[in-house]
Length: 264
Ligand SMILES: Nc1nc2c(ncn2[C@@H]2O[C@H](COP(=O)(O)OP(=O)(O)OP(=O)(O)O)[C@@H](O)[C@H]2O)c(=O)[nH]1
Ligand SMILES: [Mg+2]
Image (cartoon, rainbow, N blue to C red):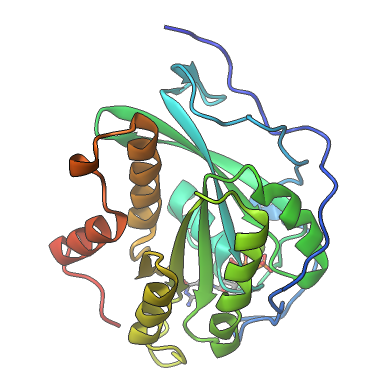
C-alpha cells in the first residue's frame, strides 16, 4: 500500500476567463454582507490548486493521518449569505455558526475523509465567496471540481432566482461531467420561507440535477448531501456496469424516506 502524503492545494492561480453570465451577489435576509476574513472560524485564504491535485489515486494518507482510497474536489457555490460556510462547518465540525454573518473572502478548503461502503473517500471541500467581487477568483477553481453543491436560501427568493445564472456559469467554467446538486438551505426557517420545496424540485428537474433541502442550523440532510455526492463520485470512478449504476436522486429520496424527513 502506498503511503504517500496527500498534497495541499497551494499553487499559483490560473488566469480566469471573464464571466458571461454572472449571478447576482445579493445578500440574504439573514445578515449583512460584511467583507472581513473568517480567521475566527478557522478558515484561511488558499491559492488555486494545481491540476490533478485530488484526482483518484492509490490509497494515501491525509494530513490528519487518515488513510483514503480516492479523493475528490467538491465546491460550494451560490449567492452570498445562502449558508455555504455554515454548511461546511456543520458537516466538518458538527456545529452551527450562529450570530453575525461574516462573509467569506476569496476561497478556502477543508478536507473530510468519509467511509463509503468499504472505501475511504476524501472530499476536499472548497468554500467559495458568494460576493460578486470574488467571482473571477471562483471561476479559476471550477475546472478541477468533481462536484458542485449549488445552494440557494429558501428564505431569500432572489438567491433562488439566481440559480439559473449559476447553472449557466457552471456550464461555462466546470467540466462537462461535473456532479451538480441543488440545495435549498435554511429549511429550518419555516416562518421566513419564500421558496417552496416544490419550486426547488421543479427547477432541479428542469435542469436534470438532484435536489434536496438542507439546514446548516439543524443539520437536516447535511451529511446526506455530502454522502450522496461522495457515493456518486466513487461509483463513477469504479466504472460499474450500467445495470448496477448508482442513481443519486433515487438514493437521496430513499434515504430521506428512511429517516422520515423533511417537511418544513
Ligand atoms: N436559520 C438558518 N440560518 C443559516 C443557515 N445557514 C446559514 N445561516 C445563516 O446565514 C448567514 C450566512 O451564512 P454563511 O454560511 O456565512 O453564508 P455564505 O453562503 O458562506 O456567504 P458568503 O461567504 O458571503 O458567500 C449567517 O448569519 C448564518 O448564521 C441555516 O441553515 N439556517
Ligand atoms: Mg461563506
